[in-house]
Length: 167
Image 1 (tube, rainbow, N blue to C red):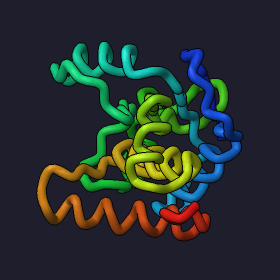
Image 2 (tube, one colour):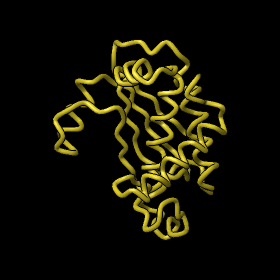
Image 3 (tube, helix red, strand yellow):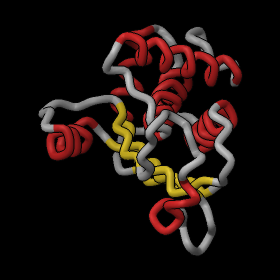
């Protein structure tokens, strides 16, 4: 697995974010039975930058906590069966890794939401990465049934790592 990290803010998170993100990504891959090694870009930024990205790509002029930019289209969430047919578009030709996409996280939101929800920054960052990974696998939460499925999968990932609301 290749995780490319960019830390693009002066705001300090004061935790081993690379290790935490690596664990959450691994658990999400295992939970969804991803049969491939993956390449993933993770950008940690501030509210101003994530707001600009949110405005450009989603036409929402407000900061958000996390954005997901998948490189793979799924007919059914986490259905990896068709990817080898699209090898030229989905895999890094040098490493053979599945190009999963990009996760962009607002460090300011991690800190603020951890305080707001009464849990640790580790739990908040872990939750946002798990949530984003599910989007990269094609899950969504626009409909009630989809939201329920995503919430259960997020819980399974975080519980499996013992990242609970109290931590």
